[in-house]
Image (cartoon, rainbow, N blue to C red; front, top):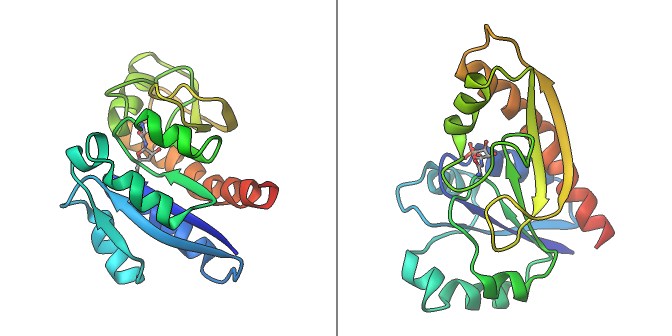
Length: 189
Ligand code: GAR
């Protein structure tokens, strides 16, 4: 049995997609979803999906080591950041080497770094008149969006595409590939 812990800060549509994907897989459990935002829609989704969810604040993450203790107890095979917007503390990265992955809604190394999330990314892609964008799934290190790349998928975009249209294309790639890459990493680990 492999177990996954998910981190999310916002809507959690990727969390829901991942939960649905593994629902009928007896070898994979989503042990918990952890969020830094007590008003996040992801917490509501977890309630409906019957997945244990927990909210933590900044000091329990960065100072008191509470999240670290929880993770040590849960001992996940993989920690998946699915729309999680805080930087991971160094000690967590040390505790779980090559076991923390993130998804970014652009083709890194372009359009990464602090403040680059959600529609900020898609707006920048549009402003630069890119002809393609996509998703990057990568290992997490102490810098935003800089760990080794595991997988990228691309989609064409045109100048007529609105930010929302770009977001929709990227989201479709996220839903299609993120669970498959998670499954692949679990099988390899
Ligand atoms: C996703 O598009 C994910 O790639 C992005 O946040 C969104 C979360 O959507 N992550 C980042 O921007 C990280 N820098 P969701 O809450 O509906 O899954």
